[in-house]
Length: 268
Ligand code: NAD
Image 1 (cartoon, helix red, strand yellow):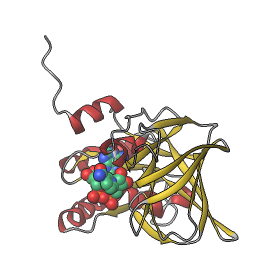
Image 2 (spheres, helix red, strand yellow):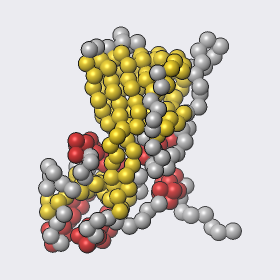
Image 3 (cartoon, protein in one colour):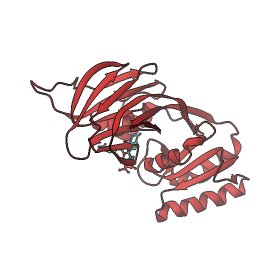
Image 4 (tube, protein in one colour):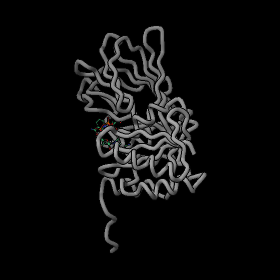
């Protein structure tokens, strides 16, 4: 088993990474930073997002597993004192269960060129200078003219991130779709948007057409860019999926409950 490790860079994560490497060497795991089969992250969900983008071009060939150093994360679900157990399971389980989660493909048409991105959590669009104005089309049909702070288009695994803070629904990652959520849309007698979030299935797509002269704030997960001259942005479920190696069962709804509610309720 060839593995790569990415830590958050703080002292605790670096120390835990050293412990992981020592345990892994004892169990015959091979450290391979460029073409690993398994990517281990130590830190938080942000560290997993970084690892996903570092290995984006190898997403079909790698699986990810995350260790958290603080609170339970959505992607980082092993605790820091469980490293010996994790290494033991990696060494002994040759073929762990792979939970495959859908991603978003984002195609940004800029002048005469196009740029393609893949997001694990979401794509966020805002205007740098204030209100974002953009026409939204669904399956090539005009849907609405958005005016407001911005638009977030999330994956099912990303539905518990920024999307949830915007009142979007939490979607089980076995569902292949994308969710469009509004950030503070302006709704009055002149301007009108749907107001609620929408979930599109895999065979649908949406296009966002902003004013090309607008300076845009574009975020792909944690990566923030500024762009001008954007003609349109197409979002749809990507062909690729990301795989998370599960060395023990951890049902999605248990993760949701533990992250947002706490311990299981008393049986009545
Ligand atoms: P960060 O470190 O500030 O992370 C923000 C929080 O989002 C952390 O608590 C992290 O655990 C949590 N998070 C990330 N992905 C999650 C997921 N899929 N489900 C549940 N929680 C998740 O920022 P970062 O490391 O740069 O992370 C970027 C992410 O932060 C974005 O992808 C977005 O989902 C999230 N975010 C949230 C808000 C908000 O809720 N208002 C605003 C901006 C970004």
